[in-house]
Image (cartoon, rainbow, N blue to C red):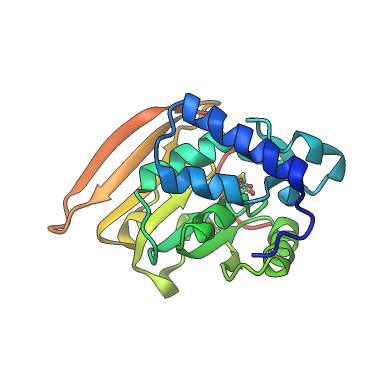
Length: 217
Ligand code: SAH
């Protein structure tokens, strides 16, 4: 990854953000290291907002969507129990920030976005940064069967239910992290697919995401 457009001020702000995430309970050293390395300000379409990039907040990225709050990105990534070399499917590419965090941790990432303008902008951005993530314009309810099975599946929009396709595309031993709920608030759900095929479901608190919608635009 190039650090073009990065500077000491941003690096310092990232170090403070990492401390803030630690204080808020993120303990996975590999996640914190990745947040400390990925230049979040370069994922903001609106350059006027870049000075706020290391605040622990979500911001608009166009098409009525948002770049997720760093705490949420770190929390979801921590729940994934990610290892280097894992094959990861992400639903909801958005700005590509979460994608870049996964890639920085050594994952091989496939990511789907339903808004074509976001898909195009983010594809250009990640390419320019030297990331090798494979981006697709499509409907995340269907997953991406062509490259399944995945070690990990991560959904970064609020799903009305757990789509069967995403569970089916998980390899035995794999983990799906998905915020589930139709209202303004979603439960963070983690589903582990055991080697014998059994599904173990846990809930990890309440979060607010933009909704997961069917049909690409
Ligand atoms: N990880 C992103 C989060 C963006 S918000 C980031 O931090 O920037 C969630 C994204 O999910 C939005 O870009 C939205 O357009 C997308 N989305 C919503 N429904 C979807 C679907 N069915 N398939 C793929 N992407 C979807």
